[in-house]
Length: 125
Image 1 (cartoon, rainbow, N blue to C red):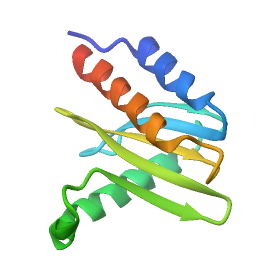
Image 2 (cartoon, rainbow, N blue to C red):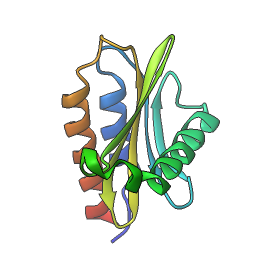
Image 3 (cartoon, rainbow, N blue to C red):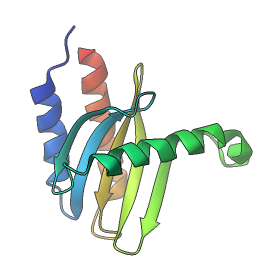
């Protein structure tokens, strides 16, 4: 089945419009390829690629944190915002990445919605 790029862009775009969000992307882990990016930071390809590199680094070291349970997300806190990376699909392994304001975003809800985008992508793959 072919991937409906417009449907993925629309789904990610809807999440990028949520309060406090500056941008969202769907990124393939192995290649770092950005499938779609939306919001005011959409054109910042290096941001999305660097975020996926950060995910791979954390994945390599995940065993050191086994005492905390399974590895499910990475949150990067910066002075002017937060970058959240969530694994949203396994085959291919995809990340839903969101950039937003620290407290202005309902991060658990956004994570659940990002998981649905991953299901949409895998269902079309």
